[in-house]
Length: 281
Image (tube, rainbow, N blue to C red; front, side, top):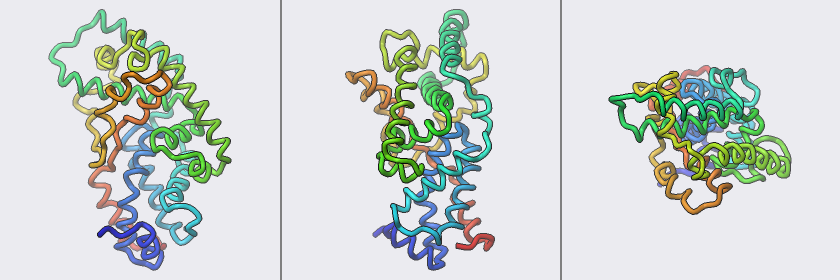
């Protein structure tokens, strides 16, 4: 029988390193997923998650059970991601207008340039869909990106979201609405998955993305990334979108992204951190 999180927290606060290790292993995947979507690159997400987990470990004694442990952990993560330095993908982020121009250029390139001997087309199309969603997230400022990730990826309600971000529930709902409208406007005008009248499809962008080096078949950032065992959303994405109104299709695109799993080596790293004796909790 699995030990409840509340019991693990109590044991960890009393100095039980094994309980702390189990506690951290239970939350590392959602925190890594949050970091991935905020930062857009696995290595940056791994670095940020490690920094977040160190903060959680060293602040554990301050947890007073005024919220769930995961909500408290998300609060630490959100503060860290909101205030840390910009990393590689944020530094090269573009606007929605620039994304629209690139999509139009990609369709033109597809008509003029044909790549032969491509690896799995479906896998490359999947990489482009996830990359496109990630690029859209990076078009948003950090505050609206955080709200959107919490509300539409992690499906946090406005009460929990307000606790995580230290804002009112109404402010959380307003920011989520603005972020959704920004994405919906872009997707309705450019994405064939949301509006069938739009010419763009993920597979139509493969040639352009390969040509300019946006994706590399031998090193896919997203489509080949490890996912959580319970991941069940992505493969149903297209089916779920069929018959939905465009607004719901926009949300389904967000919610049907992979549930990223932290790299296997990360678990050993966490264990080493806990047993190093450098951090007191």
